[in-house]
Image (tube, rainbow, N blue to C red; front, side, top):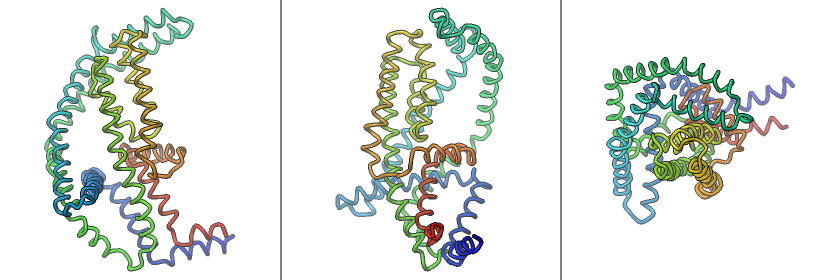
Length: 358
């Protein structure tokens, strides 16, 4: 047994490439853990530049010169960025402010939701226990004021960091520009610190590039399609906070399986309040919403992600919770790329995995 593990150890750590790879990986994780707030705009910029590079190569396939393709791809990014900050974000901020103002009080959203649930408890006493519902709302009402106060305090602290946000907003398109237009120089500079024999790294990159390029571009399309369809659906039923709900539903596709379940809760609550309980309109809304989730999961995803990330659903769910607990929001956001990276390293590691079965 000792000899067996000794052989595995030697095969891993006598390879120059694997040693350097491990050092780079450990240093990267340590730097991200220590300076995650500083590195966040760089990581997001790299992801966006990676998406734009895919668009650039697609444009080049129509015999468009490389420089012109880069300019077109970057222009698309700038247009989307301007639309986001001039229209979508102000709309979301307005709805959030309205929600904070209306959450409490005699005519607040909390009171309306309580009244709806109370009426349902009276109508369906065999399904909904009145005493349990009363105890639940009593406990929640004690926290409403403190929650509202916390939100307001968070808003004040956010205002205090406005300068930092403005710096990120200005820095973001500049970073994307350099990562897109100087991509070859950056990759060549990075290659200089790697060993001459890069067989393992080449295998890792080839597997990740194929899978993650499909995944990243596919997710961008899925977010847009699902978010727009959700916005249309919620607008038809004239729901309050349509923009917030649509953005949440769109972004929920980033968290496989779990996201769709979690985001359904606010959709149901707002639907109950705005449509007056278990009405015909409410059931039509929820039916169409579930149809949207079905179309996303069983039609849209198979079409977009054919040949994309090849991970078992259980592995994906485990990765979401594992990296989410380790790195918070960004761990959830990058859970699938991280899981794909680990899988690619496992498959490419020189001799270590095969030796374990000897």
